[in-house]
Amino acid sequence: MDSLGALNAFVQAADFRSFTEAATQLGVSPSAVGKAIARLEERLSVRLFHRSTRSVTLTPEGTLFLERCRRIFCEIEAAEAELVQSQEAPRGKLRVSLPMAGMLLMPTLTAFMRAYPEVEIDLDFSDRMVDVIEEGFDAVVRSGEIGDSRLMTRQLGTFHPYLVASPDYFERHGKPEAPADLEQHHCLHHRFPSTGKLEPWPLVQDGAEANVDVPVTAVSNALEPLIHMAEEGLGIACLPNFTIRRQMREGTLVSVLDNQLRRYGTYRILWPSSRHLAPKLRVFVDFMAANLFPTSGASSGSA
Image (cartoon, rainbow, N blue to C red; front, top):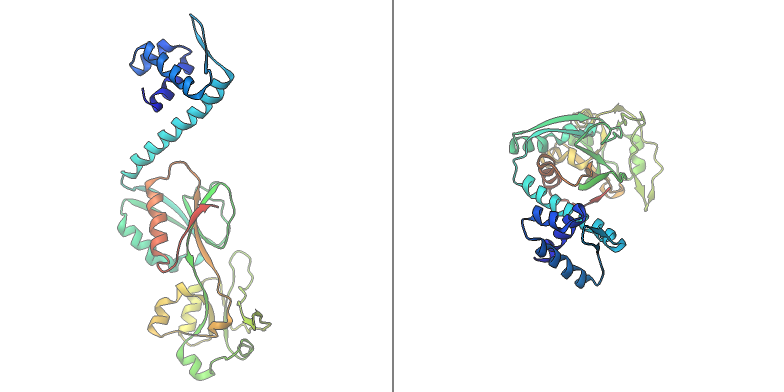
């Protein structure tokens, strides 16, 4: 018997406390089981069983070794289950929590739905910190670093803030040349829905935070209205780059003070840690990582 077969013979003999019963379960002779265990003991230089004419019992070393062997066979079963699942078509309901900016992620989400029509997407938009496990989410997309040992996480990509307005607005009001110039402009602000506080503009001057009293012309707790107001020439908005790619590409929005903003922001996808990753979740994680921020790198690990 090979090494794995010898380990299996040992586990069966330990479970039944009998070489004969172990042989019956394995479909071999009792002598084959006895010889396999004897060779195992010789290789390990340790006695695994106390033998008598009526029964066998584990030695202390055998008890310790049995625990290790059980883990080995559990890992083998898990690997086999993962391979079986990998061949299954992704299907079933997938419950996902997204930030309030999630509507701007919809092109990626709809592309996923077209690619995997048998996966039913249940979307929940919220900026609060949801409890992924307690609230029954399959996956959660959030910005920033989130620590929870019960979760796995994968970086989807980074984003950067830009100060943008329409060309018409800058023609009428001029472009700010320094952060302090913003005090003379119309400024459109985002309010965090979860706290009610205005999102600060990450302005820097000479490598330090710029002390600027940014005027408030309009406030919204969603980004889409700010994009619309900026395109309509009503003021300057501070927006993440992924929300305004089309507008900047088409020239309906242009940016200013690019070198006087802190460049930061990371989106991550989180899901409950599990030995078996369901096919629907596996393809969703891979798809989002590959398509949401296609120019950004991604990494994975424990949250």
